[in-house]
Structure formats: structure tokens, C-alpha cells
Amino acid sequence: MTDLAELIGVLDAAYPPKLAESWDSVGLVCGDPAQQVSKVLFAVDATAAVVDEAIAWGAQALVVHHPLLLRGVDSVAADTPKGALLHRLIRADCALFSAHTNADSADPGVSDALAAAVGLTVTGPLDPKPVASMDKWVVQVPQTHTAALMSALFAAGAGALGDYREAAWYTAGTGQFLPVDGANPAIGAIGTVETVTEDAVEVVAAPSARRAVLAALRAAHPYEEPAYHVTECAPLPSSLGIGRIGELAEPETLREFTERVGNGLPRTVWGVRAAGDPDRVIERVAVCGGAGDSYLGAAIRAGVDAYLTSDLRHHPVDEHLRRGGPALVDAAHWATEFPWCAQAESVVTRALPGLTTRVSTLRTDPWTVTG
Image (cartoon, rainbow, N blue to C red; front, side, top):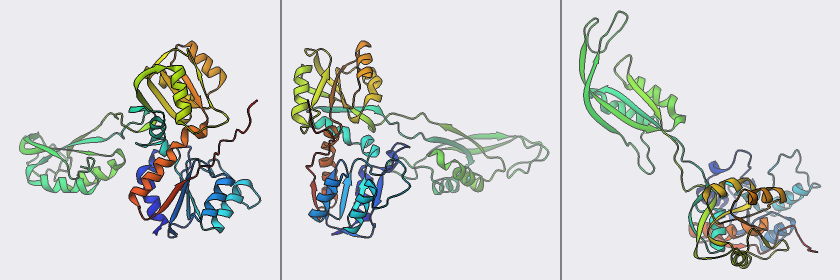
């Protein structure tokens, strides 16, 4: 057995909470991080039936994609729908944890699992999340104080590049200054031009560390007016972000691709439907697990042949096609996110092989009847 905190650490490493959208609610919903865990159930939704399954199986943790408490509530009383589920989980010592938009943007994440389920080779995100911008600091310092200055900057958080620390670049040069009345120069005299052999030290740091880095610079620098400048570097695209773009091994028609999606995803009453010329050739495809109509424009800009997502509506689809956008394939919301459950399970079993895990096969898609 392991404790819940260790399980949470594994999930947070795979699906960092910082990737969640500002409106989202992710992480531990109920449960004691110190409690012991031996069985973990994975599902898209924490419905009553899924909670029943988790408790009956003896799970100590239920990991879901959709947050139970996404929107604010002022009561989790046992006679409210959501409160009733929480009370049952707590009484059964079963924790509830959700990874939502952070799992959407992670690499790999929800849309990677969807792409794999329908036979796509992923080439990148549909809507990339940029790498956080960095500051580049350049400081001129007398060579006698270069080592002390760099140590102070590193201690303040500068010089971190990926898995490397204390990274810097410096080169020698000549500094010149003229102290005037009111100055208190550490080197030189009032009214006399002074030249000093200096190093130009370059380091990077997160923008959030600006105040600390500047304070460290001033404290370690021998001059009362250190020469420095800060440049904010442009954010760069990354492998993180919502949706994925992928390629089929061989081109096929929209009709064939729609059938492929139907075979690759779990069956639902909603089924799979497509909009566009059935004979259109499909090779490059964008996918987005869950509701993806807000990324129709991104799919057009990506130049794909088709876009697979869910919860598409009449008017946006009609307008999209009239704009000449890619063919659209619409599957049930639950079905497009279900492949993520196996991915999350794999993340946990690789890191914590002593746990017993399983993916719930209950269909939590709400639609039950077709006409």
C-alpha cells in the first residue's frame, strides 16, 4: 500500500495543476492525504453508479476527469445530489481526485489518448500552450566580484534552465564611468573618468523572481549604481496545449474515417456523425477530447482535413462548413474522453506498481434512447 499523497504526487506530475484553466477546479476533492491506498478506480465521471462501483470494489481512491464541484456550491449536505456522493465516498474512506483541463493540456493528455484510439500519429497540439516567458538579465560587474554576484543571483532563483542550475554566460570587457558630485564611487574619484575590467554576466530567471533577483543583484554588487538591463524573452510554443493534430497512416474518405472513429471509441447512443462531403479525402486530422467547438477556428488555421471532437451545435457547424473549414466528426463527449482513463491508469501503475487499479467500464454518457 501507499499513501494518498504519493498517488496525488504521481498524478500531479503527469497532469500539472498549473496547466488547468483559470475557471477550472482540479485536484483532491475529498480524502486524507495521509490515508493508505491499495485500490484505485479510474472513470470519466463521478456518477452515483461509478461511486457505487468504487465502494463495492473497495477502492480507496476514485480518479476522474470531470470535477464533481466545478461550479461553486454553498452546501454539500447529504440531501443534495453532489453532497450525497461526497458523504458516501467519505464514509467509505474513498478519496475523490480530478484531473480536468490540466489533463487536457498535458503531454501526453486526453487528446493524445483520443488520437491513439482512432489510429492517428500525433504531430503536435492544436492550440499550443506557450512555454512560460523568461527574463534575461545582463549585469556588468568588476571581475573581482563576478563569482559573488553569480552566487547571489543563483540563490535568488536565476540560472535555471530545464534540468540545469547555475547556468550563466559571461565575457570580459571594459567598463567606463565618470562619478559626479553626490556620487560615492566604490572605485575611482569624483570628476575623473574611470575604466574598469568587468564581466558582462548573463542569466535567465522567471518574471516572478524579478524582485528577488534585483535585490540580490544590488546586495552583491560593489557599485552603488550597478549597470544592468532586463529583457523579457518571447514565449515559445510547446508540446502542451488543448487538442492534438495527427496523421493517418494512409488517406481515407470521410465516410471511412467516421467508421474508424466509431470502431475506435466505445459505443454510445449518441454515436458518431460527420459533416462534410462523405468522399472527402482525410489524412491530417485535429482532435479535441470533450466539447471542442471553441477550437473550430484553430482547426481551420491548422489546415487539417477533418476535426474530431464532441458537443458540436447546428449553427456553428453550418457556418464552419460555409467558411470552407475541414470536415467535422462529432462523437459523444464521454466517448472522446474515455480513452484517457487507461492512460491515467498506466501513469499510476508505472510509478506505483504495488497498487491494484482498474478502469470503470460503466458508460456515464447521459444519453439513453434514440428515436
